Amino acid sequence: MDTVFTLLPKKLEEQFRKIPLSMANKVEELRIRIGRPLEVIIEGRPTFLPYLVHDEDARQLLHHISKYSLYALEEELKRGYITVSGGHRVGLAGKVVLENGEVKAIRDVSSFNIRIARQKIGTAEKLIPSLYTDEWHHTIIIGAPQTGKTTLLRDIARIISTGCEKRNILPKKVGIVDERSEIAGSVRGVPQLDFGPRVDVLDGCPKVEGMMMLIRSMSPDVLIVDEIGRPEDTAAVLEAVNAGIKLMITAHGRTLADLKKRPYMAQILDQHIFERFIELNRNDKSGWGCTILDETGNALPKIGSVKE
Amino acid sequence: MIKFIGAALIVLATTWVGYELARVLRQRPRELRQLKSALQSLESEIMYGQTPLTEAAYKLAKQLPKPLSHFFESFAVKLSGGETTVKAAWETSLKLVWKQLSLKQGEYEILVQFGETLGQHDRLSQQKQIQLAMIHLEREESDALDRQNKYEKMMQSFGFLSGVLIIILLL
Image 1 (cartoon, rainbow over the protein chains, first blue to last red):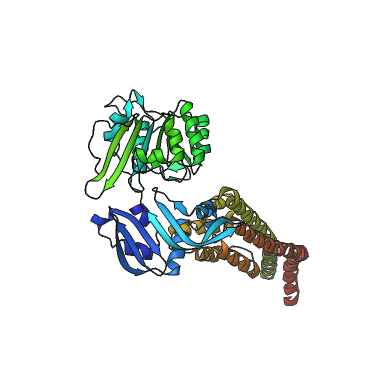
Image 2 (image 1 turned 135 degrees about the vertical axis):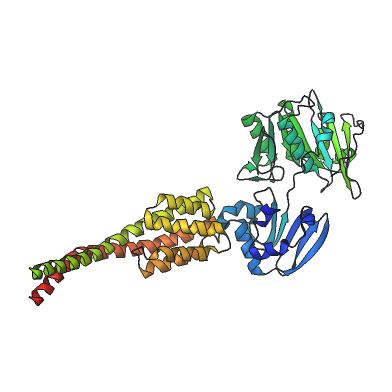
């Protein structure tokens, strides 16, 4: 949390410091909106702090985040979010300026959403035996939003690049195409989260080009890509697979059956490339649960739910 | 004997004053040139490097000669300390070194105005602001050069000669 606090101007920091320490570790989002009270989301539940945010606070916050250099954030203001050190993401909303019908930047930012990045090291540990037999399997992680796809993917990347002596898994070269700076949370190209030694990240690069670029330039053993599903992704995925590289990707959906209904994903699945499917679901009581399916769609022996 | 020593002291003092005045005249265009090159580096840092201001200021502090380097250094230190605005950090740093500079009020205004725009805009408008400040500084520079040409020699001889005049009057 301290890395987040350093971002905030003094006034706001004082307010957020009032959150008791026991809760502070569970904070998921801090929301700051002009003219409205500060909001803190802890484990999915909103709490409000009795402090109305002024224009001045918002302006100062933006300056703090940009280190007083708005010009350095041009690209970020266009995309609507900024990744800051620590891997946290600051989402922005406000008045959008257009140029030739395209978004040029967000000016007059009025809402900030600071999403706290919290790496859950070890979440994927239990799944490894199912994903690795002599070599890594092509894997798709399937889950609805907020089920922890990216968290899991991140941990898988970490394990692949670190290897696992216990299970006799050698560290492999991992290439991450991080289109939305979400997997690695890079700042100036350097991943802020722990990924082990053998990771190369293409930050902010479109998936399609990024996958090919990485294959040509960094010769990865495993490629990690988030949120496959657009038409152009299909070709890139097939290309990469045929280049002899193992793929770990995520896709939106609840089950494998769901995925088969999506036209572009169906094209990929029809090739029978992917050997493992991890279906993620989140329920309030037991945290995360997941089912792993093999290439034919049959469930592998249950390894138990992965609790937070 | 004492008369001679006194006379020599007077001439020395007035000559020194003359040289000092001439130095200010010489110094001003030089400082303006340094300032311009500083702005140019800042522009390239902003346009091509997209370097945050603090870092850019540290870099400038390393490149520039003394009084100006202090200015950028204090600016960078104030910024990285947080809890300030660019405008305030820029202005207080400027005041800090102003005494050591030979620049005039006009330049002060230009710089303060420029400081207000720093870091507030996207790259293109930032570049425009820098160029605007450059144009103002150029105008000041040509004025400064003009004055240097006109008065530098004069000040030097004026110092010496006024000393001599005082002595003649006292004799």
